[in-house]
Image 1 (cartoon, helix red, strand yellow):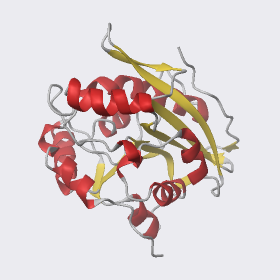
Image 2: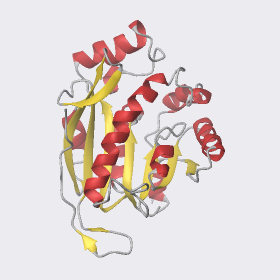
Image 3: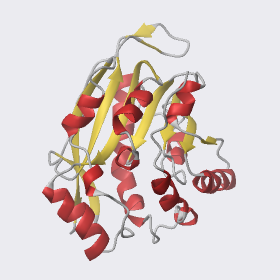
Image 4: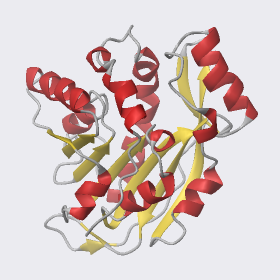
Length: 267
């Protein structure tokens, strides 16, 4: 199977240059460190519900395979591993993969990091995954439609994909681009291209021909007074979407169980 890559070499190089700073909470990736708790909470809640797992368990997702696409330095891969997932983290940047691998080894975590892409995994007939994390990646690829379709085809029947990205609105231009990069200097200038931001309907449109059920958007907003991110009905800037592949999910070692759909709770 031959699949065209959606990788944008300029975007890969941009993040490769600052790969050593992934785990510095005060460095160039400081905004992601602050953003991580709300992302982790959303992922955990969605996965607990869809796979019928016990949230009180120390490692509730034992036996489930998770793919973290655009894993960077491993800011999501590591906590997902601690929750019991068998994690494969992929990134097009060899420097990012090197940083992630070294940090995981020092932490005593077994994570399958690879310098590759979703398209290459699909072409190589990689075994499908229960969960795919597609977080803050789609706005950096050359062909978001083909990229998202490739990701969806890596899901098991009943499997869950979570997409997080930025909305192409004037509010997002003001806050996520001009404000975050030029005024507050939260991000290096040039991190984002507003023209590549995607509206929720576009995410759904890209996946319309795939056997998946798309839900969302689930907004995420920053609270200046507390300095924290929280889930919200406001999806004008940051938001997440879920896509569940059609079919019946088969729990490892258990009878097949039909998945139910649930919108994430917002506050």
